[in-house]
Image (cartoon, rainbow, N blue to C red; front, side, top):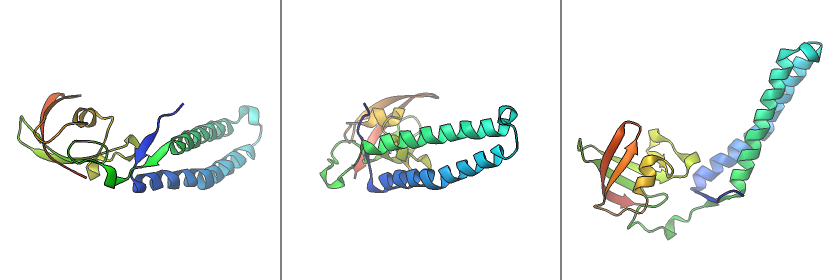
Length: 157
């Protein structure tokens, strides 16, 4: 049984678009590759055919996983979120205690995470550590580079 995941409307639409793309263009491309490989002769000694069939299996697995994810996806109503503590879709400004640098992150579902646009996963070490915190709280986070201490400066939605 899959767990319900929460997304922004934009993030959920991206997942739906990806699924449509895989089912239409992805499957059509795969069928073409298999047909081309089949045309090259004896299938028992045709490495291209075997590779194309393996790729088709991986594509179908990805489609299946995406369908399962979407069947348990829900859009978050931002008006119902509490901005007094950190939760999904919270925009959190934090300060690194050691070097004084500040950074702002938005906490999102794992599939929507994009560090370049300041979106981190709730399941990331920093995301997990920040959940439920309020302004002024200090958190110690285990990251691959060691332990980092942050202070929550601002929370908004």
